[in-house]
Image 1 (cartoon, rainbow, N blue to C red):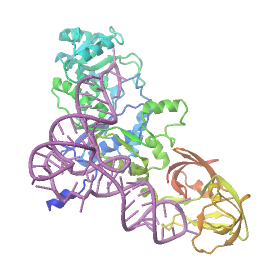
Image 2: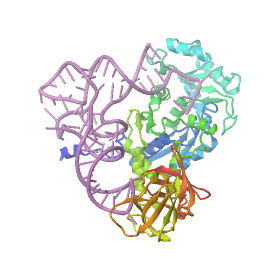
Image 3: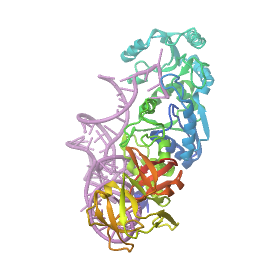
Image 4: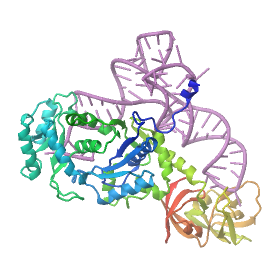
Length: 482
RNA sequence: GCUCCGGUAGUGUAGCCCGGCCAAUCAUUUCGGCCUUUCAAGCCGAAGACUCGGGUCCAAAUCCCGGCCGGAGCACCA
């Protein structure tokens, strides 16, 4: 009994320690672009835990740097849009830049409790102090002096770069990363959302730590890059008498097909015109996946299967594609699309109309495709032929190749003979189709019915699954996968 | 330089906390075969892994120590 229990493989996400009574979890992006596949992992896994244990899922925009990680006003909405599409409906949405007012009193309280001091060391000087474990003179200031200086930061007496508020940890801490970290600095540049309303901005460790407490966060999952934050923030929690949430870390994610993706790099590339936008197939964003016809369920299943290991992982889109194929294959209509079309002239009684099933197994009717003595086939198919070859034009008839240049054939019959090479084709008056792929583009001719598939995922036979995104001249489709 | 964290098949993952059911799970991938009016799907089969060295123990993927490899932090970025 117990033995077979232990054998049972764990399904889904690993258990969360101390989550039995429900959880409060958050995903905290910087809105400097739309969510990427990396963000999707955070959104999906956090929200999935909330679904599993009950509680609250919060989206919190950590947008407290108006300059170096300047937020994009549109990106806030993009996140919410993509969250909903991913099935991660937030119970609460927080914007840090709108909550600065709440941070100031906490900073002041921290000073009162002797947990922070205003440090006027030049950046480089402090760096040296930190390396050598030397306490600077400002560190010894009285609480009153610190409160006075804090006011001077707020009222503009102290200029940008002249002072920061530091949390007192331990200048002899064995890990230099933990020593007296900065909580606030002066930034006079306007913030895209709140303008020049504030000149003293919190840094991530302060903002995040305080918000996690304010929001009642029970569990934090964050990247390994923030692994030291816990140690830093615990000092602040201890000064204030708060209880620190449980923390889990996860490693860096890379995807073979995209490399590592940083939002800021993408943003630059888009601004430089290397990509046409945030949703084109070459870009690893959630919206690009959506436009390519990747289902959110496929992404969810994939991310949940990944779990939350601390190992850095380097994955392949193949698994996501395989997951998506299972979802999309039973639904997608089949259509003919001929890339690099070459005209084929056929002599004989070629049927004038083809009846092709919309789906190979699900009986949902037929497409009527006009045929006749002039058709188009793929250049790559033609190149594989020799004069005399018997070929079946799918759902139409059998022909024999009589010439390659120009491409000619003669009608053989409609009977299903023994198994011969089968290719697809496009009618002479087919519609122009352009397919954008992660690694390029294909252009060609397709059956007219493609124009009925706007917004849908279809399978171009012998080509792959695509999503039809625009009906026009040409019709525009994004490639999902084979 | 200081500090922290990882290392199971090509990729990802289960098992590791609480050593024996592990000649190691599942998925993907690749390769065969069957089926088939798509090079899709489906079905069947195969391939492929515990980073290395010590130690503890009757017994180690699992515990301990060390090496190697990889990642991260040491910003008035997030």
